[in-house]
Length: 370
Image (cartoon, rainbow, N blue to C red; front, side, top):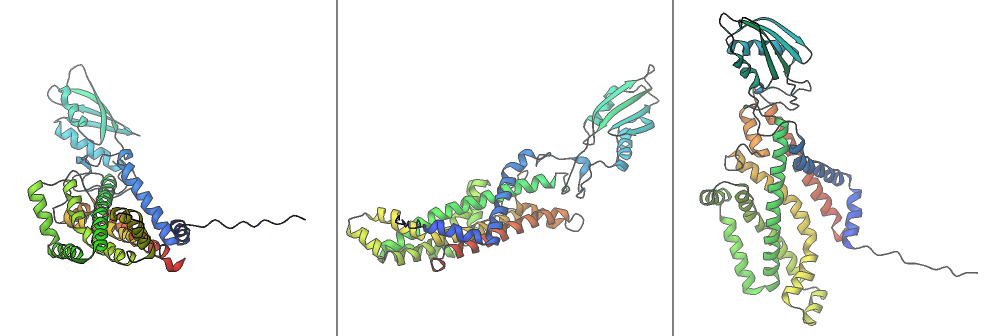
């Protein structure tokens, strides 16, 4: 008879236990997947998009979304006729065969071969070739049809909305994440130091926070833009420099409760320095509520950037953001509603996903749920 050996199950850390509970929350997990997909689309989408986000297609101004390639079959001959009229020649016969257009042209005066420049500059045709007759008064013009897909339509300047939404996702998420990271660093450091030192130092530091709370956000941003000019760096600094105040108060409250715990008092009794206690004991144990708040701070930063862009104080052309796209779409929502629906839908999905993820993290990091 052999003795059965009993092995204890390995213990799980708080983060491992939180991840297991988070995976059971379908809404939070789906939101995480959506955010990852949108992040990858914003990072790599503009690189693989068939149209650069700043490219202007003059022949496709405010065209509606379509799965069919432009120009459509019934638009080719009118486009050829318009270019022929600009070239000041006459078209006697036009034949469209697939992606090839053949035009018989004639004129009362000798035809200049440079008339093909009108077709070279067009977004609808490519590789035009002109073969003149012996008298120079007639000839055959052959060109290919340039097929362009605008799945989400174009804006007032003829720029692809899909490419601009992708670059807008990149800029909005980048500003949201960078501003939140800045607020995270400043708020955690400031709140932890204030709460741990306590006394007069804590009182003075919190009164400074109250004073900064009283400053209007828009006024602070305008001052930065006037002194330093408009740039993405200034925008994320302006947002991050105001959003850290809430973070500082949250971390201070957590620090006030943690510094009275036994493990902190034991570290003090063993001669640990204040910096070491903050780094190894206070801040790591306060990260649970902080991480939850960051997921709520990112959409707040994105909305702040959208507000600035909507007011004309944020990102400037040809660069764009979701807020700027929504601002432009709101001005054209009656005649070109797709300019508003696309970026507004993407921004709504991002905000909902971040809020659902924040709720899931709050539940998974709650010690009472262990």
